[in-house]
Image (cartoon, rainbow, N blue to C red; front, side, top):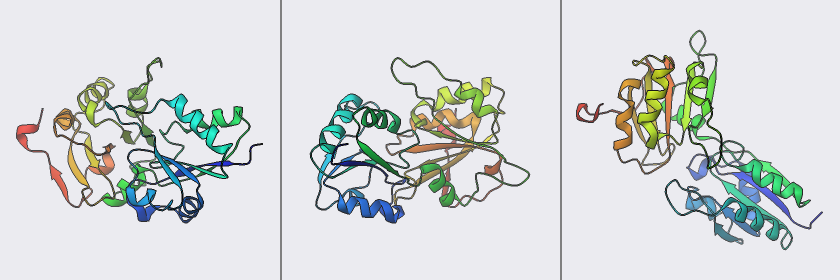
Length: 251
C-alpha cells in the first residue's frame, strides 16, 4: 500500500454550512485537494494548508480528462499522506467516483468515501415538499438523460414514467427533449414540474410549471446547476418564492 490515502468528499449542494463535520475535518487535514468546478469557494478554502487543484467538468466547456484526474490522484497519494477528491453533492451520485475508485484499487491505494448532501434532498428541503408522501408517492427516481461519448443510450424516460416522483440532474439545457421523451412514454402533459437552480445558495431560483411547458426552461438562461423535479407531490404544495414562467416563454 502507498503511504497516502484518498478521501472522496461530498461538498454538498452548494451552501458551505451544509458540509458534514467529517468532511470539514478531512479538508482541514488535506495536503492536496482536487475539486470540482461547482464547489463553493468557501468550502475549498477550508483546506487551508493544502495545494488546491481545480479539475471540474462543466457541460460545453473545457474540462480535465478523466484519465488525467485518475493519474493525478494516484501520483498524489504516492507523495503525500492525505489527498482529497472534493465533489459536488454526494460523491457516489453522478460524480464518476467509481472510475476513480477503480483506478485507485488497481494501483493498490487506500481510499475512503465521505458522503455529502445531494442536490435533490437539499432542493426538497428548500421547497418544503417531501419527495415521498403517504398515499401519493412511494417511489423516487434520481436520473440524468446525459450519455457519455461511446456509451449506450439508456432507458431513462421509461424509468421516469414508472416512478411517482422524478428528479432529473443535468437536464435544464435539454428540457425540450426531456419533455418530448416523457410525453412519449405516456406521462400526462399536466404533470406538475418544479425547476430549482442553485439550491441552497442566495441566488437560488425556483420555477413552477407543467410538463407541457417544460421546453421553455432551456431558453431561460440558467447558468447554475439545476434540477427538474416532477410528480404529483408538487401539484398542491405551496412552494415559497417560486416564479411562474411568463406566458411569452411558454411552449
